Amino acid sequence: MNKAVKKAALCAALAAIIHPAMAQSQVTIYGILDSGLAYTTNTNAAGNSMVKVPGLTGSVPSRLGFRGVEDLGGGLQAVFTLETGVSLDTGTVGQGNRLFGRQANVGLKGAWGTLTLGRQVNMTFLAQAKADVLGPNLFSMSSIDLYIPNARSDNAVGYLGTFNGFTVGATYSLGRDASSAGGPGGTNCAGEVAGNSKACRQITGLLGYDSKDWGLNATYDIMYGNAGAAAGLTTSDSNDKRITVNGYAMLGATKIGAGVMARKKVAATRANDLESDLYYIGASYPLSPLMQLDGQLARHDVKGSGNDSTLSVLRLTYFLSRRTAVYTSLGHMKNAGAAAIALDAGGTVGTGLSQSGISAGVRHMF
Image 1 (cartoon, rainbow, N blue to C red):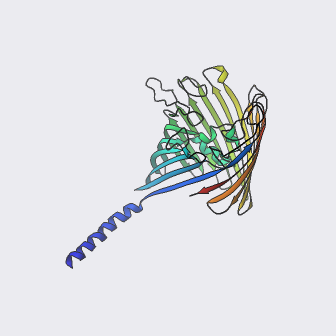
Image 2: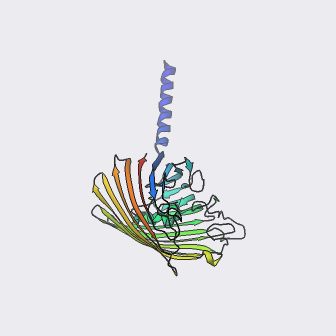
Image 3: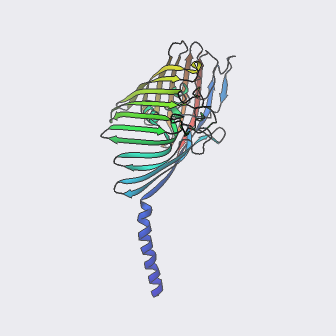
């Protein structure tokens, strides 16, 4: 009986030691599954239409993630994020076939801000998300510039801090994109080249202010190329620069967001140079506690060219629960000159042809 009492006391003591330690660490598993059907016109030069299950996104891209935090004491925390993109049409991973292509980073967080190391979203991504009411919807301004929903950097050091409403942040990447899979998520610019400090570097910065009723944010984003990199950035002197200014305001329950993205690409050959402005304005209005209407207009102005595009989108979402929703989108992309920007992200359109489309789908969050 004495041994049993001692054993019970020892177990209680171990439990008292172990339980507080476990309580200070937390890992969250989360995800979004989003898929549907889309119909678009003029998908090729012959003007043929298409019905498909989109691979890149529905209303938002599908994903599976792991997020962790450990309390180190004194207001200091260790944090990490592992997040993989999932293409529900085929069950494959996204972002250039990376296992954790959306995010894979670890860092420290305190009253002074958060410092992270690894693959992470950069400041262009974070600022744009505040004002863009449609986000990475299948029909959205992400179709005009596929970098917007893919604004992530490999091999990066990041900092983000918020102080009395003011936000300051930056990322510095030693090699912005280590995947050669092609597309905006795999542009073959791994960097970290001895003797060439500019090869595949990327720098982004953010300065902003956010309150309960409005916010204004500005970003600077420049990426350099190297031999073999996509989009004509095949030398370390070639670069692609984006400067954004965007803001939003809350008018009761209605959110209005607008902004501009000025882009200048200096490629290895003049034929791949590009200078453009992307303007947008949108609004999000709750029709009822369970129904929301979002709309957006965007204009892509290519400098020194008539190859401009204008986008208009409406999206209606009905919430079946806090985690599940159904939605439908109507969109139109007007292409002028030799412009060939598809209405749907990752889609195709005949050169100079305008495109209309409708999509519908279901989204579940966990």
